[in-house]
Amino acid sequence: MSTALTFLLVIFVLLTPFGLVAALAAGSHRAGHLRLHRDQFRVAAPLVGPLDRRDREVRERFARRPSWPGPGPRGERR
Image 1: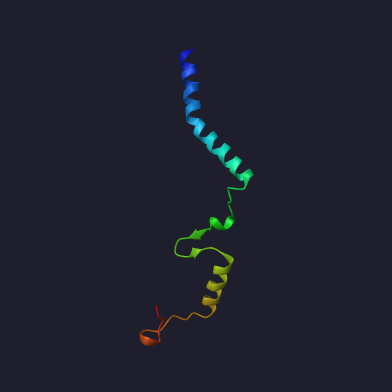
Image 2 (image 1 turned 90 degrees about the vertical axis):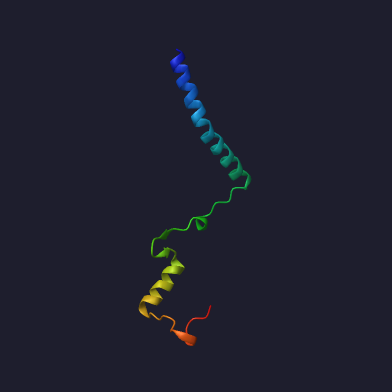
């Protein structure tokens, strides 16, 4: 009996933080304090960068007509 009770107590202690977070997230979402949007979690790929429609347009335009800044004073200023 004491082993089963100990097991249930351990499970309760381990799962309580997840339940608390779920309850707080649900309450703040209902109250309008939790504002999650898809733009906050942009998808990116290694060596490519952000995968967004606007970025894709720039990459396609660059692929059609690549132009790098020239060396020297005519090049890109920073």
